[in-house]
Image (tube, rainbow, N blue to C red; front, side):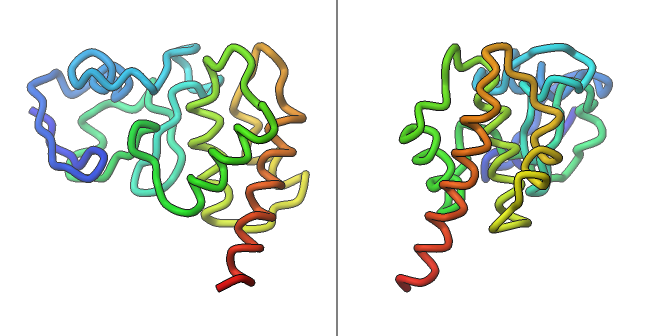
Amino acid sequence: MATFKLNGKKVSVEIPGDTPLLWVLRDELDLTGTKFGCGIASCGACTVHLNGKPTRSCVLPVSAIENQEVTTIESIDGHIADAVQSAWRELDVVQCGYCQSGQIMSAVGLLSRNAMPSDEAINEAMSGNACRCATYQRVRAAIHLAASNLDTMKTEV
């Protein structure tokens, strides 16, 4: 049995402790926004937030998250998430879309700790997110736009 907080609600699942969180989310809890890409934590498609930090769920055993907080793309919210999602739409970042939930989760994590990241900081934070469509320049531009929109929101308050 594994018990943790998922998207703001306590959940318990009867599952072997070595089962990767990704499969618990997708197969047991029907949250399919988190994607399987590589299974070795190198592509970023499976990114969720664990206690607010972007984390690869494909290699994270569910036993390691006991009583911790997991947030998936299905419930990411707040002003930073809104700014990122708005920038993604405005700049038409998505092509096929497969990697985008992981990209968005990583971008929100970056802007949560660095409100005005440089290109280098963006490249570093997003380096673990592979995109087969090569939308990397649009991802970087969208993160800059989201940061700019967050900065504008601060000055308008």
